[in-house]
Length: 347
Image (cartoon, rainbow, N blue to C red):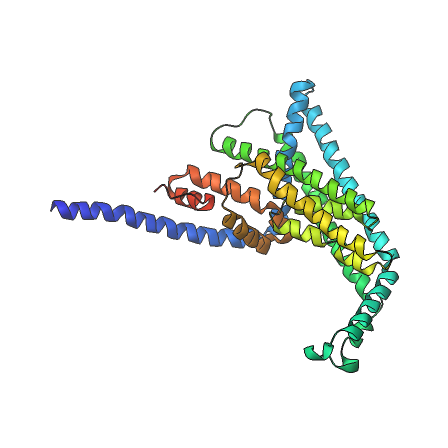
């Protein structure tokens, strides 16, 4: 009888745990559908939340050091955010105009490159024979290359297209901020995310400045835009740095005035900057502020990228870090927190 009771007593927690895991899986699937179908509203709100966390220390500094009233500190912080957003939009808008102005030159250079490739490489081995080979590509309609380049740059403009909605959310979040220190579970999550956002923003700003300066010295077109892309894409671990390094490649290849040496340096030097910043400078500054397993970060990039696109990849690391902190503090989900952090299970 005693053994039967012990067996029954051990079976109940196991059944409860199985039910809990099943409910968590169903909740995760339902949450995924909600995040996807309501992304038009959720993306601006989450962006505003991350911006608010990054700007709150500035408002707090003005209140404590400059003795400004909370309303005035929040207003000046919003003005800083508006100026930065306006500058980024102006840079991208000017770059679109510059691309449109040089579209014919890029189209001609693209055709010349294809003609050279057709005459120097055995395209027949790839099923491209004679006039049916690269000729169809060489005779692409005018504006096809410029359209591709403009589409790449306009991708960043799409990120700013919801700026007004983000600004509205940001105003409400900053106005609703009391300036008092948080407590409990949210205090830990807020402290870690603030540390990550501030450190990552500073490192990304330095990276973007260095990349933009190097490309400007090499006289590569759209150097400022590529510096801005380097700043934004640095928030995406590993993948972002690779993409930011390769972005100038079409411009340096399509511009006939760019020499081979400059083209090589335009890729090698920014790549070196990303490597040094990501592997030497960034680890001591950020440390374990997010405490995520590298595999977890990679899976988070794929998941959030599938749900929310590029913006989801930018926000993947901080949002997954919040999920890990919450999972650590709740008993039923603590094994999930251990899994995300790459630690041995505590239970």
